[in-house]
Amino acid sequence: MRKIAIYGKGGIGKSTTTSNIAAALAVMGYRVMQIGCDPKSDSVKNLMGGKKIPTVLDKIRSEGEIKLDDIVFKGFGGVLCVEAGGPTPGIGCAGRGIITAFEKLEELSAYEIYKPDVVLYDVLGDVVCGGFAMPIRQGYADDVFIVTSGEMMALYAASNIAAAIRNFGVRGYARYKGVILNCRNVENEVGIVNEALKEIGGEIIEIIPRDPLVQQSENMGKTVIEAFPESELAGTYTKLAEKIAALCGGEEK
Image (cartoon, rainbow, N blue to C red; front, side):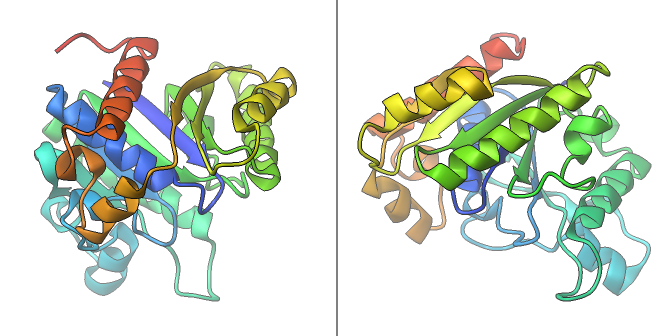
């Protein structure tokens, strides 16, 4: 089982990218679990036909004792979908929600029961506090990718995330594998990101072009892989998934 965390600034297209990677890996024959670690709880929506699923925190708050069937849902291609959830607005710590969700999945033996080949953690990266750093600081994730654009704030977040990974990396935790460039049509975007990577470290793993098919797919409640499987963009996401599988030691399916 390979455990991969995908970080990025809020609004950068991190969840869209992660869910398309999950869908592509599923089509390739991998058994995939995607865990949304953003308080917005919309990471897996496009794998679930546009519907939001109950979060781990919501279920714990409303029912106390819960079962795996209450928090793990099968989406497109059999992708196992989980949303950690967040605290009641204005009360509590969003990072704590991630910790609680991870502990509950372990308590319920989720990984042993479902036996996923790949676990994808979709993690907000504006602030790398203790909770949001959980996937990389407690050994949950083996490898980390960062979604960025050529925009200043996205690259600033990427720099902070990469620094956090380096801090925890000396303890043998997750390894930084590079960035996924989700284009925003910034002038000389590839050049800007490559220049920033001289300081941040790593390289561009794949370039995702700005494409209206993303919005069209999301309006249908689907990933591009599901909605437009023959499109050039679906091919790009598939190529990205193949590269991630290769970089993270995934066996061919």
